Image (cartoon, rainbow over all chains, first blue to last red; front, side, top):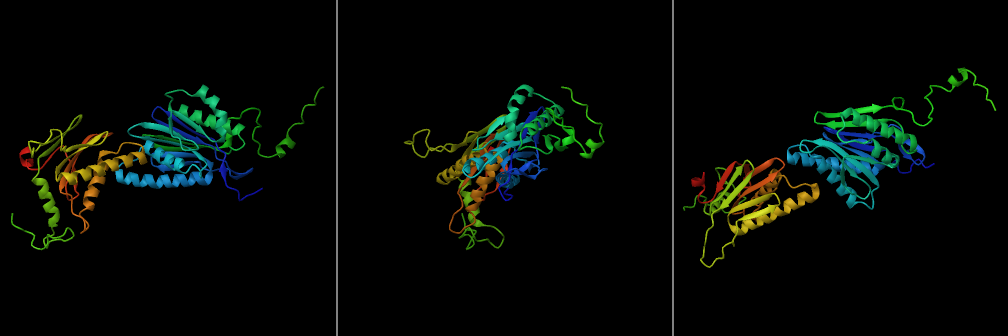
Length: 231
Length: 173
């Protein structure tokens, strides 16, 4: 096992708009091949007070893009004299993604709130396309969520409905995707500000015959003997 | 007009003992002696007008335009040396296009004004450049509604409800 291999975030990332803002969600697994380099990563990164970005793909590439965009947005905010819009932030991300497409391997979701457009989500996949969407999913775990969102997404959800949808979706993806795991982090952005939430594994629902969490394997020893099997 | 400078007015990089830069003041004179330009900000837009000076009966009407479009949402009316004005308009167009291709949205009018004013001011900082001999009224409509700005040859810019430059500015005000 090569522990010096580039870190990749297999990942599941989600961004969803609701009536009044956006909810961003992500898993927390960073892998180096089959080894989990970080089981509690924070893939939702701040760009400005009102705009955040979900990162997937190469950890290094997504971090450097975020750093550059944060720097440019900071200068832009000073020149403009007011907070940057989500659209401008997303545009800066896609310019870097597109112009360096041969060297970068990272898909991102930019989400935030500004006073002109309200809550907005922009998906910026590999290659540097920019697409404004009512919701966006990304990362290796997102493959398992396309059908789920087709069925479960609806326009005009409340903040709590939207967050529950995001948490459920990330936890479904974690169950099926080996490269996603750990905890679920969410960030809610609206006119009142930013709220970060954290859902450890025991708070997440179990899917498809998963075992109940156990504190110790010794619990099995003290449990009752299993029923004899009948043929 | 008597010369008030006497030695301190030969270069834009020279201050006079009483703290004035005469070259910039002379540039402003060029603006004051030109055709009037007026701009008014209304609830739902901007209105700009220029005094058309017909220097020759042979001149085609519609030529020598002094109001220019800068971008889809903004325009500029120029008073003073027409050739200098053309340079400023070209710069404003370039700044607006550059902003939009970097940030993905039309340039806010305040930002456009800051950039054009910086450019005008730049030309007052070097001895090998002369200041622009024109004043500009910049009007536009962005996310924050209609806005009107005026940029003087010194590079200073202010936001206005109504502005006038040129020969008839006192009368206009």
